[in-house]
Image (cartoon, rainbow, N blue to C red):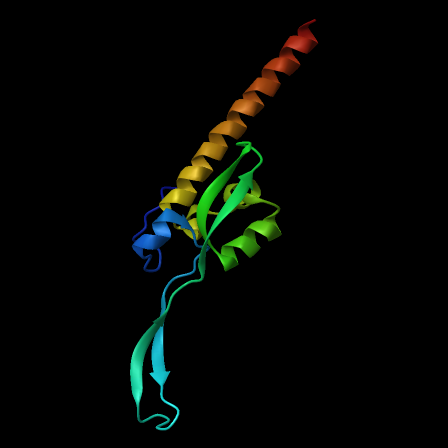
Length: 127
């Protein structure tokens, strides 16, 4: 697995470290008034649409309460579930401490299950 450094990624705000944001960050721009057109501008920001959702993990066998963006929910749905999304997405795209720790947990579960299946196959073939 690659060593991931948060410095390499685009600016990631602290709130994104506690959930799955699917590369969504704060966007900055100008608020333009109706009457002045380009005369009156003020700076503003657009924050990601973050929801607290319970997402089911098949490998863990439980629901996880996560902060996720609506874009991340669509990505999870497209990949076929939380487990597939985390396991098949690169760490640099996850860019979140919570998502990377969940991915490592899932990888250990998968490795344990594969080792257990290998033991079962060896024991059944030796009989």
